[in-house]
Image (cartoon, rainbow, N blue to C red; front, top):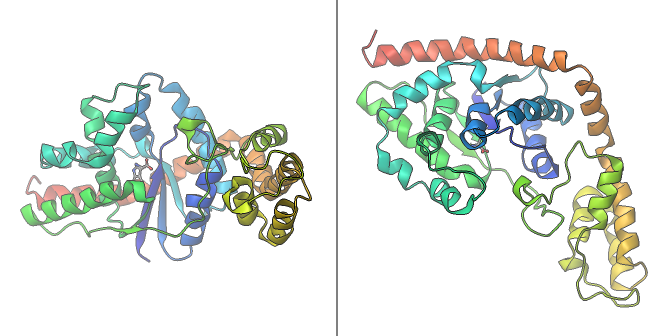
Length: 325
Ligand code: TRP
């Protein structure tokens, strides 16, 4: 089987966006590839260096969420980046041969510097973010990398770095391909992109009460003010949630709205119950996993061991290719 690697930064709780955008896909991919799923804690540190203690809390919960959503620790290697030191070793080696302008002109780098106000990202480490990501991928000689479109520039850089290494020394690294899958578009409860930084998400670990409150605060059709006003489901985010999480109710919801049979408040109340029901199996599994954090730690220890058996081979090959050994 071909190797696949992906990772997430433990900088906040897992939410519906992760469930639909990545995790459902990750669990399917286990059937076709040898999968490595990584907690990117060094990458998290590049922005969270002011308060690194939160990283650990998030990653234990994150791994519980991954498993609850179908990532199977028996099929895939689940591990924490900082427990596999060769990532950093390859990062250091690659850093020496990556031209500075490749990093300075990276659109994600320029974008983050412009947009992120709460942290100082004008650091040496943050500039090297994509080089570490390239090391993550290349150290496993992964052929496929499932990512969101926002990560495409990093994958392009990884391919360029692989080509540069191969042509300078020896053909060691395959050029990895991105795996961009079609995912249903899910906006946050304020109609912007669902994101931790906007605080507009519904987390997989949210209690039923919080889910009810969050759904109640969703924006519906702004032109529907009174109950008797006819609504426009096509511009209503609650309707798009119904379509994703309970498609068999779509016709009814359209009828309630277009024909002014049910008010938005009640429509949202009903949706909250739909979502709570939908999430129940995940919530149950996640909470039971979190009762035994030792088990999660054990999975991660074993994962790091399996990962290391691959990375130690690659790094030996790298030194040899460079004639340093
Ligand atoms: N940069 C990725 C993100 O923020 C996380 C990540 C780190 C990653 N290393 C990776 C993703 C390697 C894919 C492959 O989403």
